[in-house]
Amino acid sequence: MEYLNRRMKTLRRQPDFNFHPKCEKLNVTHLGFADDLLFFCRGDPISVRMIYECFQEFSKSSGLAANTEKISIYFGGVCREDQEDIMQSLGFTKGELPFRYLGIPLSDKKTSVVQFKPLMDRMLSKITSCTAKFLSYAGRVQLIKSVLFSIQIFWSQVFVLPKKVVQLIESLCRRFLWTGGTEISKKALIAWDRLCHPKSAGGLGLLDIYAWNMAAICKHLWNVCGKKERLWIKWVRAYYIKHGRVWDARVDRASWVVRKILNAKEVFEQAGCNEMQVTQMITFSTKGMYCKIRGEFQKVIWKRLICNNLGAPRWVFILYIAIHERLLTKDRFAKWKHVDDLKCPMCNNEDESINHLFFQYCYSATVWDRILGWQDINRKSMGWHDEMRWVVRYGQEKSDTASMYRLTLAGCLYCIWQERNMKLFQHKRRTSEIL
Ligand SMILES: [Zn+2]
Image (cartoon, rainbow, N blue to C red; front, side, top):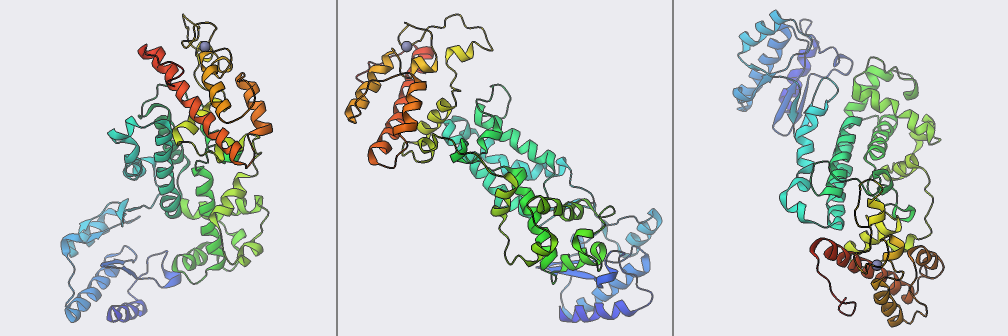
């Protein structure tokens, strides 16, 4: 390799050789990675031939030959005659941009949604697999978290994700959460945006991909400001920043990705950092930036019910929906579709609502009374709104009793909701003792 590097250096000094127009300032003629070699020059037949001869000499002396079938030439802004001339004299095939290199699409334009399709399919294969359909809500949340995690640790570090792609990923995850599939049919019980809030602020702590991607782009800009020895940064500096400040770079003629990175200065400025401060940062935390971009969240008073609940995830999920009063009890269902019978399927006494079902004058009240009694909590069961008021005063503590209360509340809610659905849809019922 050293020989090739030396040989290419002499090429640079020959007057007939022309650099690729965006490589001249840094004298870049070739890049090697693992078994691959990439050569760059202006698209004229003489320069290409000179590179080819250099490589042939290297081949002869080192015994390392290239597999001609795997060689492709990529043109950008070269006229048709020159293209044909070059291909005929060398006998290589013409490659088309974009192509994938090490799994990453390389393109001369902004990567379009279509080009992201294979990547998205891979990312989303988990949630579109047939076993995923049979998961509970809580199981789906876990799966969605793992998809979002792969975006967080890999995709958004490598790419600047177009807004459309972010929206598409989110809508697929959203549909999967509420339907178990990819089709749109059920109404979302809670807005996606809300689910992305931290748990202490009434969300499920799902990743806000858009904000994370912005934070990751900021990290690239931080690198541009400080890590001057890296090749790609030298390149950005040579062509767009020149000798000025990074903040003053003229981006109107840069490629989409470079523009996105250099424009991230606005995000830094909104977070109260100027160029000097960014340059002086010794480390950069993407997570810290993510939190800054998202701003402060107001904590909810019932946060311990969800954050510190030892119950099974599927219990806690139903509790979470109930706290937001989004369980589809008949009264809520009737708001957007006609319901013939509004009576509570558990007791048939009153119309069904969350306040009634948990746990007012219903058969469920006997169950909750017993559980409260067993925990030595001296009160009768009451309606949901009163229960929540009680939670704020007594159920938030760190004590074992409060912790037990949170667990039993989630468990009881889950069982009653299951029982109610069984009664309603399968006409089965169990006695309160069994429950
Ligand atoms: Zn009832």
